[in-house]
Image 1 (cartoon, rainbow, N blue to C red):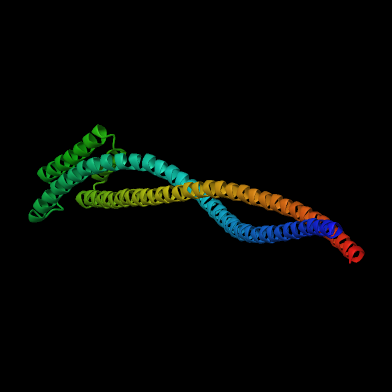
Image 2 (image 1 turned 180 degrees about the horizontal axis):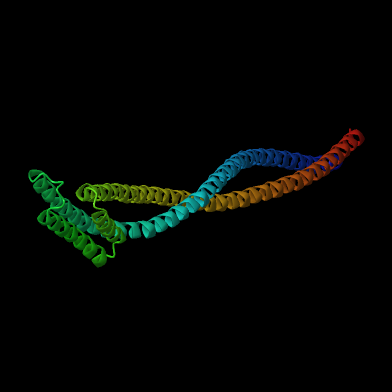
Length: 313
């Protein structure tokens, strides 16, 4: 009948509305599930990346602190070594000044002492020859004129030679020795013994002075060598510490740059995570609202179908 055909058409229409609403609700639920799954996967990836970045950041900070400590130690050692090196340089400079004078004095002393020794040896030879001659002539008979003259000539010859040496080299010791020998000759008592004694004493003093000069010269050579070696060692240490400090500074600069990069990356990741959370929350809120609308619409259609069925039952 016509009434029955109209009822069927209305029921078909409502059923189509119900099917579409349920289909859309199902599709939206599926999309929400997929969106939530993708969100959880991305969130896990971001969380892992943040964990890795934070771990690297912590390691970079630890390394930076360690390198800064190394730099501080190297800088402190470098300051101390520079002070030691400067002290060595001053010591060496003073040594070179003092020892240069010592070397010059030593050279002059050696030359002058050589002349002195030569003169004293000659004087000793003259006296020895006179002593030897006197022995064969029963020396002691000083009243004999020839012996006296010979003695006087020998002493005068020695005195003249020593005075000449003292004057030419401005050697007060030789001049003093000449005066002492001249005075001894006037005393009249065993002149040659006194003269030989004076010469022997002078020779002893010259040898002792030569030994002292040689020791001073040797000390200068040794001290200069040791101070130079010490200075070179400190300079090598300075170069090593400077290299270590420069390397530490380079590492610090790179570490600080890496820290800045990591901090920027972490900030960007945190921003992305915040934006992602916000978008997900917004999408979920839209889903919840749409689901409520679908539920309400479906319930309305289902209620209408029930009313129609009951009426046209």
